[in-house]
Length: 273
Image (cartoon, rainbow, N blue to C red; front, side, top):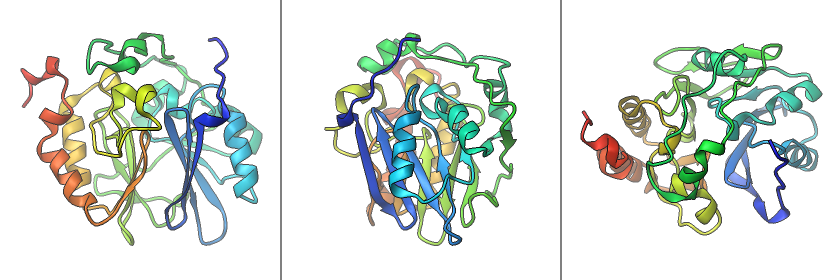
């Protein structure tokens, strides 16, 4: 694909998302860094093509060392594209849910996007987005799988939660001690079909996952309800601004309760459960 030019005004750091959690927005997608008591840290997601230098610069400015691992919420191009280059440079593993492995080991592409759903420039451009397959076989390791959210050594203090729907192996991460939730694309805090138009200006509010790439709406609805039941106080999304405060649990419960109206594309509403 043609080289993507990422300009300085498309780079926005989030310096204090929550204790020991930092973020960086690159164009329309976020990556996060979780620091640990032993002063090591872990990178969550790896952004769009040609973003490795931007992530590398952020790491050099903020952290004394390379991360202990890269953990992927899922395998879409805007969350993994710098992973291979950075993992090789830093000599670290890449973790993902086993159900994402076919898209991360060169075996298969994601299903074609649905440009007619949701409206907005992101939807219209979606046929042009890379669908893989990526091949991280030499670095790829499985995340633990457990319906209750298993602890994970590379992310101490956090639960790994399988939250399918946007993709089969999509995961979120929850820290119980302070109610911090990293959600990938399980839901967004900006209108997901209009990232380009609103990445810098849209008010932070809860929306469903990006419709043009969501493969299973029943599972997506169930995942949002699962996350709402945690009553998180801070949400760190893959798209949009982090959101924090006592009103967050009620807002997320409202998204879960009214998911079909807020998130479901018109083409799916006639078949909604």
